[in-house]
Picture (tube, rainbow, N blue to C red):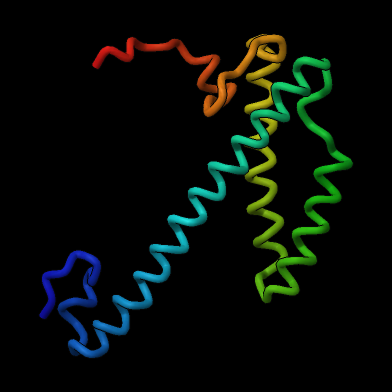
Length: 134
């Protein structure tokens, strides 16, 4: 019986060799999840820059034609990758909604004309700054 927290309930229910295989698979999943988080962070940094540019030039936060094309493209890619295209569409729609929300916040905060420091997102620039003397 394993006390390894990664084992979860399986640690008390399976033989050690099966548990080792399960933990190996879960380690791969954990690595993929971490990669997804970092990729999403990079994606949102890029969309923040787009939001600042849109606000600066008074462009609308949403771009339905672009969004439609992106959804079609991602559904094709999902199908090629043997991922449910409907899931891919739901996932992208969730991201698009969040990006639009960020763009609207940037625009309403008047950040299109404000400089965003390197490594800082528009959300960071809009947030009240705390002292860094810690």
